[in-house]
Image (cartoon, rainbow, N blue to C red; front, top):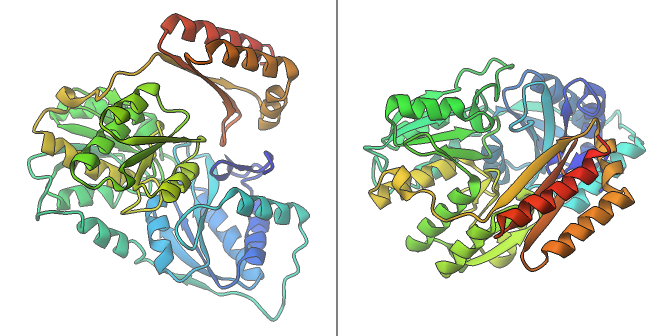
Length: 444
């Protein structure tokens, strides 16, 4: 798969700058119209550039003979869950997830609700780069609008209830990041009986993820303390990830939530395959914790898509990423912040304890993560392929072998190189991390 366009979760960039231009997205629509026949659905989050990109995609698709179903503003997990029932060949999600409003992206969802494989993405990229589309004047698609696509999602969530108001007595702060869940999530928690304080629920096209949501959790934590709430839940712009804080406003990382949900599902007899799936980015302490409960633990490459593929392979219904993607596949085929938040709340009530008395669930091993930013993704590729950098990484891996792990990878969405060093020895972690960072810093 080329590094020029597609990352781990589709294509992403700054709106009105390649590749997130009307021209490129028109071409992408034509390529998808070449790959698929029948009808294609399009959903979007609340950022201002979504209308432009939606129009370009629809034009490209219809020019190649595909009909288009416009779903409007929908969270990514909702789009993924309802896709199999729409009678479409695929769904396109326009979103840059947790990024600021000036970024945007295209996520590609198959007819079964799962994201495109690497092979499908490579085929699509080849079609876009070939740019050899031949529209048929006798075959032009039509556009229809579906404003009720969220209905089956809400019906499935309602089925989670074991009684009329399972969250009665729980005070929740929910931050919707001024994103796609703004009109949905607060009402769902109220329907479950929670006392809800909702923030980040006034999208204007420009304030998505701005000083709120999963990437800016200070407001959530502050509000939890001010409201004397039991839990804070922060979503991102398209609703596929979750960050949680306890009743004292302490932010919890994704690995702690994975541990808690794995334990809760196991105790509730609902952990299929007796297995939890995470990525190579998750802390060693999480793996040890799962094993202490008799839960099988699997790791994948970084990327929610790889987590869901492994879950399907081994028959598990739960997996997640440290970054906050939580996949509860009995409800949705992709990361779903709302479902994850509801499940955490149900598990918390079952403990009959304050959240600050429950977390942290396990003790983390020493770990250092650095994000080194470069000018362009092309520069990142150049640095990663440099022989001296490769030599420094290999030496670090040899030194830490059997004691911990070293991961150096490109971001799938930004011009970043991520360096992660983990071991039970804090001094070793600091030493190894410094050596790799010094090698990379020479190119900055």
